[in-house]
Each structure stands twice: as C-alpha cells, then as structure tokens.
Image (cartoon, rainbow, N blue to C red; front, side, top):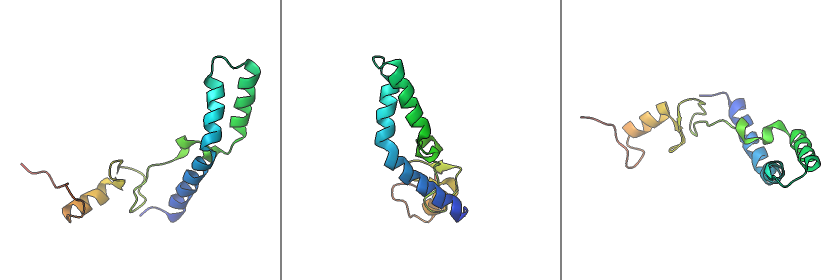
Length: 101
C-alpha cells in the first residue's frame, strides 16, 4: 500500500492538469505556429512558465487504482501487476485467466 499522501497528491495534480488543459493547449499552439511572431512566442513561453508546475501532464504518475502502487501498472486495467494477479486468480476480472500449457 502506497503512502496516502502520495496518492492524494497525484489526484490533486490530475485536477490541476484538467483545470489548465485548455490554456496550455492554446499557448502551445502559439509557440508551435510558424506564422506567429517572435514577440508572441516569447509572451506565450512566459505565460507557460508562470503556470503552476503541477499543471503539466508530464508530472502525473500512473498508479494502481486499488493499492496506489506506482510501478508495474497495467494501463488496460489500471492495476499493478500484483493486484492484477490476485484478482485474476480469484476470477474477479472477466475474460482473463492464468495462462497454462
């Protein structure tokens, strides 16, 4: 089980990313646009730098929805490898079973 503070912090970051998503998208479009002037690009960079760090989606961490474990998380299920194995062995995930040959 992960520390609750880390899980809560990641949830706060997700909310922050959602809140600033549109603004970041517009500013990054200005930066990437070849027709925008140097002054416009510079202003867009400055506004991007003034945004909170946690507004950047790079800072999000994939965590297990069950335990909060940060490593070995399967995106398809949103579970860590350990939690996934336990649930599959107990038959809690439909359509998935342990391989045997």
